[in-house]
Length: 218
Ligand code: TZP
Ligand code: MG
Image 1 (cartoon, rainbow, N blue to C red):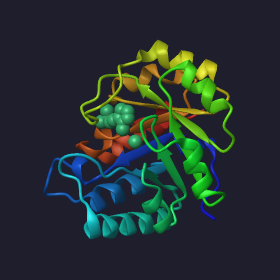
Image 2: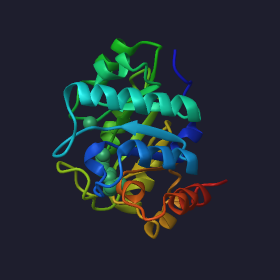
Image 3: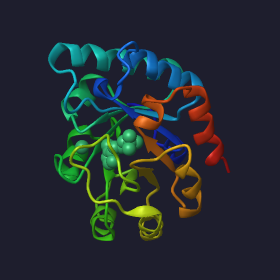
Image 4: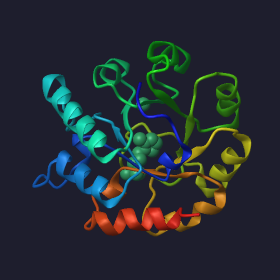
């Protein structure tokens, strides 16, 4: 059994895969370690799209990052891939609306890990509210993102606030969040932010993670 889900895990939630490290003088392990050192509250391994690893390189990377999360006592969450999540004894798994059906994923992982689901609309939130075993929701992209080729339409800050209002489950904001626009988000009631480029491409990961944690301190 992995770490038990707590809403505080959603405050500074870093998502990354090899493809997100654009400065090839750094490795994903180095960037992730700095982010953990700096105080992220969750890490999601999302190895996807051009420049991503596959096969054994991906398994080795996943095992490294899993171990690092254990060392820093933060949850290791796998995007989409149930098999990899089980193999690495992940704490959580995150699925989107276009991925494997969430009810099936919940059945496959049982009590061994928590489950997060992306929801863009109130209708999707309503459907999710009837499924037992979802711990948190990820919003649709709040701002335009360059990190996901097939991202859904932008929902904006007001759209995020509406989703939070419609949901009993905690919601983590995602998509195009920067050190500037993050200031607009606490008033929506979101539990925190999940970011790729804000951390993966930061020139100072310590400063960036501090901005996130201070913006969402309560
Ligand atoms: N899902 C919706 S937007 C997105 C994902 C995985 C990408 C977020 O990346 P960034 O760089 O923080 O905009
Ligand atoms: Mg997905």
